Length: 606
Ligand SMILES: *[C@@H]1O[C@H](CO)[C@@H](O)[C@H](O)[C@H]1NC(C)=O
Ligand SMILES: *[C@@H]1O[C@H](CO)[C@@H](O)[C@H](O)[C@H]1NC(C)=O
Ligand SMILES: *[C@@H]1O[C@H](CO)[C@@H](O)[C@H](O)[C@H]1NC(C)=O
Image (cartoon, protein in one colour):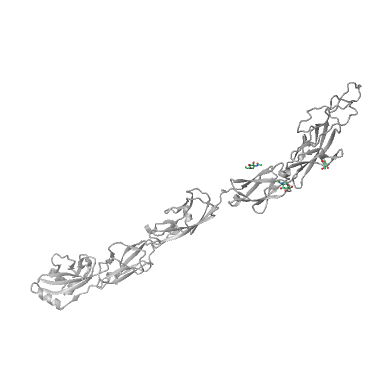
């Protein structure tokens, strides 16, 4: 606080002097320089010495400091030292504001004679005010899409001081996005602005708080701060992102409608509509759209159709996520359909020898059967079985083929048709089964000769029969089929009494009825035997023969006579026993008829 005394004899002072001389006595001006805010009692300068007035003079002439009008008196004179001292707080800013020079005008008044000296006190600025921002918080809303180099005007800080004690520069807290730039307008007015040097990213940082400092040029330097608060506004600069590029899951076939399958999820770093996601199928293959529903908001996929493992073992779907303005991304859902035992085995007859001859040897293959199960793994493992009590078995062959093979001798005459039931059961849980009936006929082989119903036949005929009369009939049966079982009867060649049998008897080839060819004479011969053959029509034919005995009985065709020796050619029988026969003598053989002799057609057994 140097206070210098300037005696000035400038033109200005002379003019003032001459202006006042008419009113009062004015001897001269003194001027001081003093820093503001000096303590009360601080010495501004020794005005006594400066005006050449001794201490005694000052007292005797009642020296005092005066101001114009009501102006406050900032200084006074110490009469015992002649010092001009500070009496009131001198605040340059309240006295002069932003004026570059600040002068307090006072007067030293002396009496006897009245004498007046103007005192100019130059108040010097000290850096007693810090820069001050009008608000502590400077808010900006800047979109993240703002380009590098964008500028944002800042409100200035104010400093009540003047000159270099006012705001000289600004500094911004170190950060990567903004710098501060002080621009000078045409008028010379300076203003500061934020300059974007690196683009903002709301998704990374949605707000920034930067400390802005205004610094003055005083010594010591003073500063003021404000917080710059930047709210980063969203731009749709992010596409939705799925939590997984591929969602893998599995689903049992036949899952009921509404079964949840998987939920895809995408996030969008943007906010509001920019981050609002809707899901949809990417309609590349429309057939899956009928199988699944997709919740557009939640991304949940559910079953709406029938899922069939056998028609599709894995399903691939593309799902799209779209945000409000339309940025999209895709994910893939890979669905493994798992098998459920929903298909029974299918039995098919690939070939069948039908009918099969009854003489095939055991182990002959008569058919080939194929068994398929459309399911997988255990669900397609099939066991095949055949019903019991049939002379057939299944022999596993390559893959899922089976041979149907005979296990024993067949006999058409016993069983001519088989309904063979084949069952197939898979190993699923629960197992499924199916069955198929194979109809098989046994073809005939001529393996049975005709067989006569009786071991031998006897025919009884009374003599003198009419030629052509029926003697009896023979019957042979052959269980073979058609011609193999068709029986033809015939007489085997032979002689009776030197004549061929055919001159005595004939046999109806179809019916087996035996007729007499001639009339028999009991008296000529009483019995004879023929052989009848039964032959089937097979190729080669089979045959058998049977003996037919013909007994001729007597009728009373001769006059009564001695029976023994019998006369020839008599056929009438009257009394067989003579009246006077001796007791015990052989009279004759007496035949006793058990039945009427000329009954037909059967031949009674002897
Ligand atoms: C076999 O099945 C058919 C048709 O079902 C039937 O008519 C026939 O009598 C059956 N045969 C046997 C030997 O069971
Ligand atoms: C009779 O048997 C023979 C074999 O001995 C056979 O070839 C033929 O087909 C059979 N006839 C009929 C009608 O079954
Ligand atoms: C008649 O049958 C018997 C026994 O069945 C046989 O021994 C004989 O050879 C057969 N005769 C003819 C001619 O077939």
